[in-house]
Amino acid sequence: MPEIPRFDDGMVNLNELVRTLAEALVNEVMDAQADDACAEGNQRNGYRERRLLTSVGPITLRIPKLRRGTFFPNDLIDRYSRVDRAVVAAVAEMVASGVSTRKVERVARTLGADRMSASQVSRICEALDATVSDLRERSFGGVRFPYLWIDATYVKCRDGGHVSSCAVATAIGAADTGHRALLGLEAVDAEDYASWRSFLLSLRERGVAGVLCVTSDAHAGLRRAIEEVFPGAAWQRCIVHLERNACALGRNRRERRLIGSVLSAVFAESDPDLVRELYHLAAGELGAANAAVGDLLEEAEPDALAHLDFPPAHRRRLRTNNVQERANREIKRRARVVQVFPSRKSLIRLIGAVLSEMDEEWACRRWFDGDSIAEAYEDRSKWAPAPAPSYDGTAAEHAARIITVVLADEGCERRAA
Image (cartoon, rainbow, N blue to C red):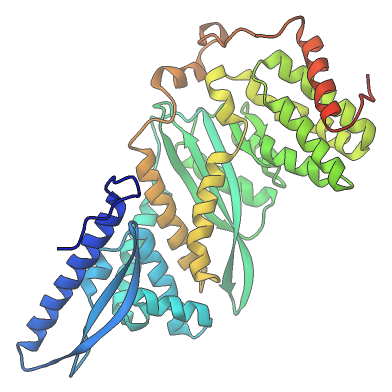
């Protein structure tokens, strides 16, 4: 019996143990299936090794070879996770259509997709398409979503004989139960007002209502679409993207570092009065050195600080689009295997599979406490109190001290005092 894998401190490495046991069990099952095939007069002819990527890590498959015919573990493919199956289907489709690269062909051999029949791929696709369709078309009647996070990520896709970047719009919401949910997924031709309006209307038509705040980057046309489809909802401009936009206007490395340090100091604070004073001072100081940065911050101020008008316990999550960023990273990680999707349908299939698994995880635990999320619809007087400010003097005085220290740390003096 193989030794139980352990960490350096002697603790059992459970992930490696599960991976090892899974590898041994799968190979034993394939051996038994191959022996059954040989009972009809066929003979074994060695093995071929393939790597299979699983949720517990890669396992090495020792797939039996037969003297006559071929052996492929169909039932093993059926046990792939949805995401794994979507990757296999996309890779197999690329190989079959002759548009794969050498890297994709290596991946196909690793996954065993190069030996899959058209009917096997078709069965996988049909099952996945049904799951993704249910996810994209489900209705939300009876549930309110006070907060939405909207974003788009770009993935390369083959369309009409040429390769182009396809924008994939996604919407994630926080329900009045405190749970997160995927609300929408759509491939769009361009990030413009018409596309965003159509996407948001599809959410509303499926019952997304009660929206109080939408967080996103400053995508072209999105703010106007939000105002029309969800009138009365605030728009929170993601502060992470705002900082990046401001830093990109810096004329040299030193100026970009200064911009980043000042804005980080602004958003490191939580007291609304102090944050507003700091933002105002930051716009003035940075604008005195770089007019473009000052103009950007002045224009963005009401939207960058919109989160301050919501319950204290919600502000940190409202002010960034981090929940979308994490989803996008997982999408990119999975899409990297395929590189260029053979069709828009295969793209939606894989991204839908990724988001479907995330959505199921979100449904198992609350993101906001039940009493906390209820504050979104309550009068400000009923909110749980925020910690009292710990600084001396007024918010304006403390903000001036903070800005002075940050500038001094960067070798600068106040210019807009």
